Length: 236
Image 1 (cartoon, rainbow, N blue to C red):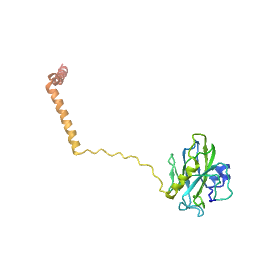
Image 2: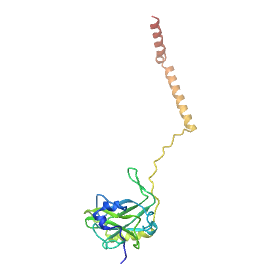
Image 3: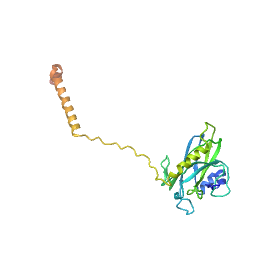
Image 4: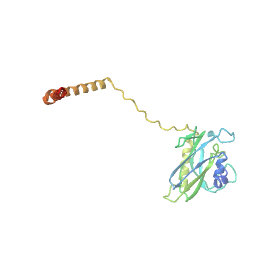
């Protein structure tokens, strides 16, 4: 039987995740409830340059396996026999940015996969390369994936076969995705035609005012009459 890999000490993953994370291991964490057929995703920071024994991106691609929470393994690297192949780890150079603007790095890895048709319950993640000889960097696993009943998703066999089909073309590592730049507001530049148009509009407007005053005697002399009345009042 093919050797698969372990991502961590299962006792640390299932009994005390905080201790595992505090020990320097990176983890994929999931929140909320999910149904078979949902596509779930979790991102974690990952490092490999500080320890020569850690797996490198060049040792990949790394496969993602789903197993019930609490399953144990006797050796490392390995995964429980009943684990299911569900995805391929996406490795990115550079840190990733949280919604609050903080950067986590030095690199990051994404676990993104479709939940197959599995019974409701709590699940954990394992990962390793193929054939299974190491895990990626300091990632020790994933936990917190809670599956609830719902519409049946695709079978585990179909999901695994699709992953195998994608494996030959899976990149070992990709540049860190950059957020789309905000669209720049271009300044308004008036052309010669625009300037002439504004000038023509101004002249036409002035001519209309002159025409109204000239063709309406009452309006034309109203200002003059008012001025004469004011001067007469001052002389009195």
